[in-house]
Image: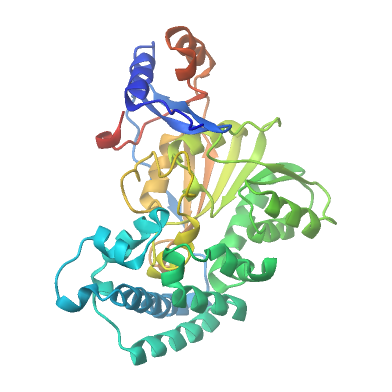
Length: 440
């Protein structure tokens, strides 16, 4: 039986009820996962203006990172040509006419859940010129040379090539990107993407250093969305004695981690979903680490506020996040980010709502961290660093001072609202960052 979700009018009622409470100037209400269904959640702010954060920056790489901009441009060109070849193979563009994305998606046979990717492809003028076979073949060879220069293993090269050659089948959902990334059930290719390359080594080293500095002796560390454990490896190499809770939304990754880190003392494992209520039965953590996962949060501000509440006073959040959507990502990893065909809550509920993008920009992450109640924000690499061309950044931030307890707000909301509209969680934040055109 289909689950009936709260309507837009329902969410407006919740927002108005919260904004009528003392000390609440603004509220933002949205839906989060709740068992097999969905329930309202809310951010509330007193409305006091916040100063624009001025993050500290640092350079990460040495001389060897000078090749990063050129190699990434070569790899991105191969992706652009592969996308253009896929689009022009439909035959739609031979007449020189303009075709809407729906017509193109239909001609491709694109699965409904992947049609946002087609829209992204068409948004670039670079994909509208058909490549020659020779041009495409040369670009694919150049991609593998650039891959090698960046230190990606051969398995990752095979993955890139397979993904670009399989775009028609991927967009039709005839094969999944998971089947290419975890070919044979192994993690070699995925580790090549998240650990075994020049860019990831520097990012993971910087993140591990931040964790080690914040964890100190016998620190408590929570890693969210730990996945293949690529950043975990770097952290465990940087700390001696740590109480480490490794979490992910998938039992597949938890089981693999239990085997891989079985000889490491202090490791524990648990399921945790950034899009559901995050309340592990645990004392506060000294550090929360989230590498390449928080872009999956349906509402970035809500997830950051929830993480702040998991941290001890003065605790540190360490993020690794992609902030630029390269063509190579749009032709590969974006297929991992499409909603499931039966998703109850597809799409984002924050400032990305109604846009065909996954990643927040560097500036947006800095603003989101400040709004959620973090201070002393640090962002690496600095602009101008060759590593910045990768569009990936390590953010560190410290939990801010005391925030009002949201429990009284929950109690008052429960008195004023029908039971099915009482928010499952309320977080107090310093500011709301909303797109009012989508606000219920």
